[in-house]
Length: 343
Length: 264
Image (cartoon, rainbow over all chains, first blue to last red; front, side, top):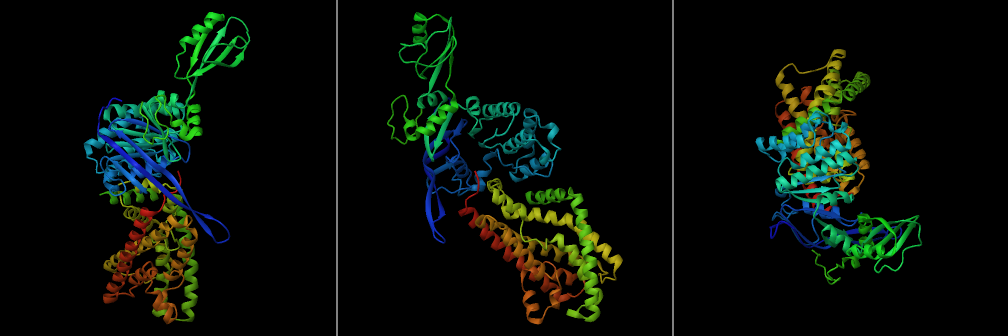
């Protein structure tokens, strides 16, 4: 990470959120169940970092974001954003954060886009010059100029999302929470949103916490990724570390001169598929492909080859399935240790 | 000022619903005629019913039609806020540095403002052309009427806000909204002026908050409340407005402290 010893802007220490759910258990009887949506979450995000926060549905991502905005009060633990306890000083914190919910809009449905921005300016008491500069920047980078006079209800999903992201940034927030910012967008809109976020983070030093199901978002934007499942952090590190932690495999694709039976006897690799002269060999992601190539080339008529990186979706699925076991890291940390792994 | 901008935005927003406003004007006018003829028949049999003359009774009818949409007399809730709570979109409203109640009050006042021009003025004008109404001649009485109508809108909002907030606990508050809307129809004087009711019911109904929505402003308009009675009427409205808004704040803090925001 670049920001060595930077002050943490977001700090969570053993944060918990327990919901009590009542279920029917007979005609009138209800039994109470405790659901631990967030269960002992500890992490820090330094200023200026862009972090991916991923996990399956119901893992506790949105609950975490709601606690970070102060909408939900944690059941236990300590939580600070920019030194502020969100649930106690929600209004004060609101001026320091921006939030984009991919599936909800903050814009005023029946009025032109620019009216919503005017409202944001008053709500956050943004000085006129700052407002103008921020708005101009967003208009230019996100191509908003033709949309400003259009009622929000007439915007396409991609246009609305660009409008929402702008609304979240007009007051120069220190932290930007993005909850599924690219959900439902087409490829062009996704690319536009991503490059804008990247620039905002680089130029402004805005700290970004990004929730997504689209792992391309993570690959293109985040150096660091945190994986949450059942309310616990099961991984915290970079993408390469995630691949290793999930026991991911890479694939060596070799084209031979002729059709041959499956390649055998290459240590550390197994042939998983044969299709004519082309064969696929799986090997552990952290191992080098070079010895395999040498071994194969020595005994087989090798024409061409390619190395495929593991599919990140599959990695995550494996992490989810593995639960606590996936917390194991190649360095061999204690699997029971609750502290996050940072390669 | 933020809340002024919210009210202005809401005013502009409802101004874009022109077809709905036109349809509403037609509806209010048609109903005005129907009720006016029913009242004429009633007052023909029982002159001075409730202390009103025929012209005053007719004016009460058209005041009712004018205020129906402005003070949302037949509506028990804030359907938009209820839907936002149900879907979880209210999360967006909650993390903002703005007060939920003031925000929605401002938006409702903006809505009431535009509806005063459309669904308020037009039916009243038609009614005044078609029937001999007892409309005040001096502008001051009109001014008191507008102030009283404004207080009525605030009381109406405060009641509907309570119903809307119940969605945090009930998930679906449309039943409560319906009960509240029907109570409002009856106890505001929309069905019959409250003074026409038998003594006990009449006295009780004139103490309930719904009387602030129509009975009091209509009485101000037709000159049935002047001097001390006028001030008492306005004070009655203001007291209910303050009490119900305060109750709304209590409920709001309970809701935001305790209740889960629904949906992912």
